[in-house]
Image (cartoon, rainbow, N blue to C red; front, side, top):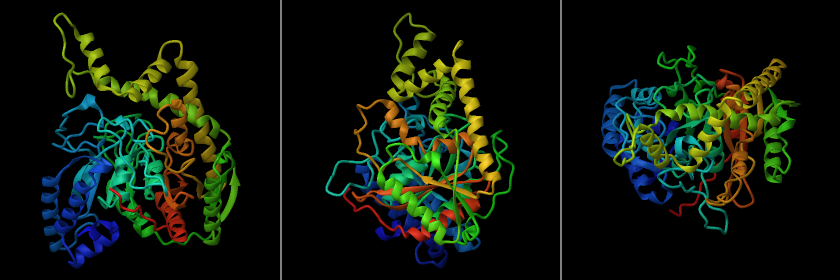
Length: 495
């Protein structure tokens, strides 16, 4: 049974239809694997009863013929997505015991396609973090370990539970969200594929908001083909989300021909940051060589405002977070602090938020409130928005020159140990997003593809940035990189 959980979505889809096994069999295998991997702390809650019911219905649908691609496939759902009647806390104590009475649009579409929910996945609190250490459930441990070192490693963040669960073969795919790299960075750290679609491609309705102009849901899977299958099911116009694009959803899987002859790939000189490890530089160069060998033209490009992206992001994202998180007040849902006699509504707000929010969330709320305050709005927030416009124009200028995609490293390093940055300046942690935040600021699609291992046996990823709404083309180029790299490494089971 354990071998079932190691399959790709594409293989499982075909074998389910061939009758080699049932969705019930596959679902039980995933539930068993998830229960046996409690050491990783990837799941916040398992939904065994819901999964078995969905699997039974999926099997009936497959027997009837014409079932969608995801029918019968067990998935994990990041705790940021509201699933009706299932604990959905965004990994925060302020939402303890919250049971949504509605379904997020993305998960509703997955269930309509016949997918099976085996549980909710751990994450950084309110998606604020790059190491999955800010969760109220405790940190997630990566299934990977350094050679000769058994210290637990971060799976990345904020979608760390999603990354760990897919890499450890606990589910066949998972949902993630990406505000500044929270799908692509953990995917790179754990040797899987993570796709951040164009802003507006997937509905944000029913997903707990961090920074509304940056957040975007996407798939985390073992292969590019699996991501293409899953993205098609997740994407689509939603009238309940005013930022959702009313555009047709392509058949992303059908676009995976691997033929990229004549494609023009850009290498931005600004991404050669000072102090970049030699291994990151080497895998970037090897990625460029793979694309050349596949028939693409690789050219140097310039994105001149890149150096301002990280500071602009860490003004805009906290500003939007401070507004979005103002709704958690202890009155309508979630945690409510106990009050003493004579305490008023202000005491309730202050005590509930002090008890409910973690340190990193409080830090970002305070930064956001500061940059939006009278006297500082123009100096910080407005200026950051102007920088964002310049960053977007940089990409537009490059694409106007005929560039089809941009190749960069996904992260500035391989995964680090849990607690390794605990005493560091928070800015050191924020630097993990240095290669990814520009994509969110410009609203572009991006994908992280595993491309090799470092000297200690840990995965390293390459990032491809696509043209807006051209995820199909971007995924085809990623498919070519995946095919050329031949990455097939898996973590050795220690949990």
